[in-house]
Length: 122
Image 1 (cartoon, rainbow, N blue to C red):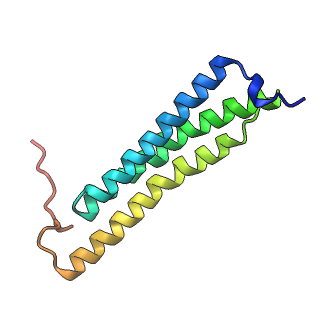
Image 2 (image 1 turned 135 degrees about the vertical axis):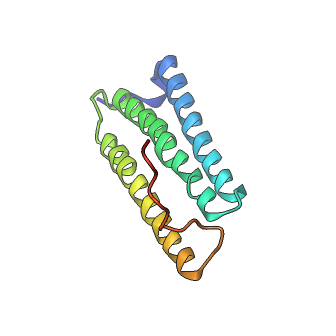
């Protein structure tokens, strides 16, 4: 039996709304950071906020809403969260390494070299 949306308890509506606002606010914050930060290396970190915590809050809101409306546990959104959480850092690392390689090849003096001496242990 599917529960009509108008018959949802107030606590469900408040929690789902708060989670959606939190998730969309974090995603917006990541997008603004992406636009405002100056260099590629600064900009690469801002969207990860939206894809990790923002997607997590929206995912929790979706799980709660559709579990209450459908009168059964809806957990397939967790797979989306797991895939986003696993792929975001990997993508970040690959993009950063590609940019470092490009900048080192072009001889950019602002990028540190990879041939730094090992630290001395005393």
